[in-house]
Image (cartoon, rainbow, N blue to C red; front, side, top):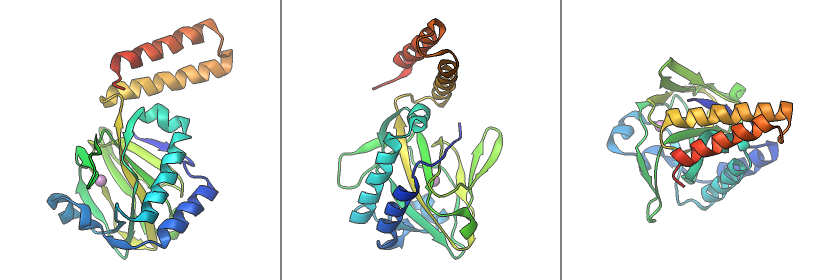
Length: 227
Ligand code: NI
């Protein structure tokens, strides 16, 4: 399931993140790549250890915690500390799949990447190219979102970033280990959650049918989730 989440960062949070990362030290993106990704990837990145990047990543994590849509769609158990990359001057990232297990260097932090996330940080009118193209069961999906908006997609998907031929494309990217490992089960829970919310809005939280359906949601989550 691909889902776009609007305004993860509002204008003030976006400005704070940009203030931190724009002044930081951008290095060759292949500093952190495995050998196969290194063949495909041409971009720049902030080091995982960069203090400004860590602070900016913390702002992104705070914003995610305030997004009910993110929580409902991802059912997050662990979120990798957000990273930042930048493409310009024809840079791109060829077709690849993200690693299944992500570790944070020098720590015992590790997660299974169930979902990949890209949070766009530049106004799409200011650059050409830089589309995120995700292969899913319905064919390639092309994603290019306003600054502050994010796309969540299965980490198992093949995907690429098209060359940036004008301007600069800056983004935050990271991975999520979900409490519900299976993408299909997670999708059903999300659909049910959204349906229950809409029904509750129409009939009231105390409506007997809403209470029963809420019970079904939680009992499916109890059956399928690892906490
Ligand atoms: Ni990727």
